[in-house]
Image (cartoon, rainbow, N blue to C red; front, top):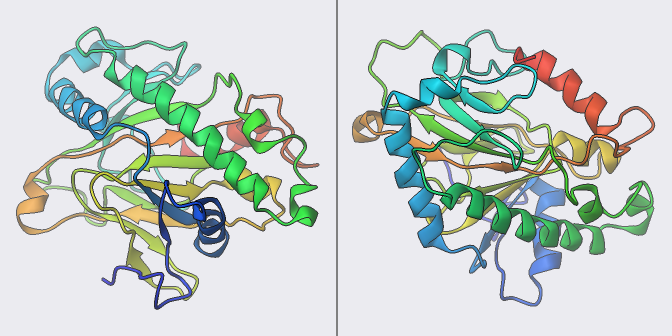
Length: 289
């Protein structure tokens, strides 16, 4: 499996330095071309990210997580592998467990506030990324936005930090089951610190699966369905997946902490959808509502 190279392929995801004055334009162009962009030299402390990884690995390894079983109405709390998502169009559940962190939701007493601090920092940075996108979107496209993109997520109760653990593989998994089947994200943008294990791949415009550049310490950002809807398809929500590792990697847990930027429920995305109606439709398709 190739790693896409922005210098040689039109499918290539650009990796930009936050400190580069050209970063906003380069990043937005990458989102338009590929649905993904990578930011390095960003202001989110790597030590905080690693603290979240370590604390939550311990949490998932223990039994306390079962006291926080997810609320089907509110969608906060712990989702075991038995109730994990089934990607749209698939029949097998993903090989993962996760905890949904909302500002208003339940939060484990067994961990520090590191994940909450990460949520706040990443949300602030995400607002800046959305401002980059809007500033470098063609006027005829940005005219479709019902309000500034960054304003859509201001004080949103729906922006979600999902803390995932992909457990070590045992060899007894259901045939065809993978850590995360091919899917698209629902939200505006997803902000994802590079994981402690590789495995994230995207489907390129040429129809090939390619590894997403994800050097430890970088942030991987991708377009979600809501931004695709709001932009009339100018920004594409790219299909991606997390493949099962082989060898030594199969015996290790993989941790991932994507922040899904969700607009406030009443935000109008298009003539067809508000953010609330769009999210409700997709959650039902995923089988978690």
